[in-house]
Image 1 (cartoon, one colour):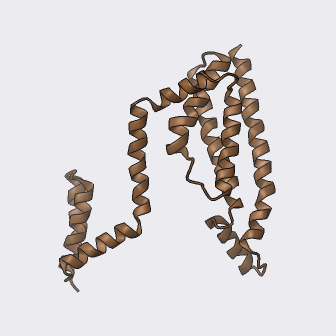
Image 2: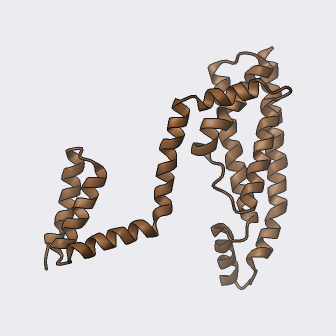
Image 3: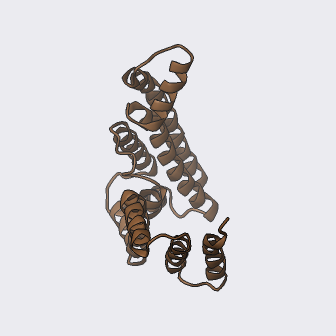
Length: 223
């Protein structure tokens, strides 16, 4: 048995231990493993290129995150707060209920990646909700501000979780269909999606009530 291809593991361990560029370390380890296994270097490079092309949607995620970080650095959160402060009648409760409705509807149409904690809640929704709460109830203690941010994150979770099952091509619906079919109950994805609508409406009503009750509680605490 040829153990030389395992040298790629040693290259990864050594490269990370010496804190070299991770991309350079991984590519070097892949090239070394391929060449030591008897593959042509061009074939190894072609395989790397094919893997990157087949999974390029994963790379897009890591490209978006630095962009959001740069936007935050140059005042995205401050601009979000300014917009809310200039809106008449804007409250934290109304804002989060509106975002909950948007998140559920978008997820129900299959656009579940429009929102999210990294790309929407942290840079936009949470600062806007915090600004609306301060505008309505006055200055808040640090603990109350953290609760507002947590409610913004929870709103995103509820909207996504109960909205995406309405979209019949989502993985969770296909999984449920497979389980029912294995148990002898053949159902179409569309039938399962239709039955997800009452649950989504109930989740919206319950969480919207929680948001509005939380907003009122902040008002009483601020007096």
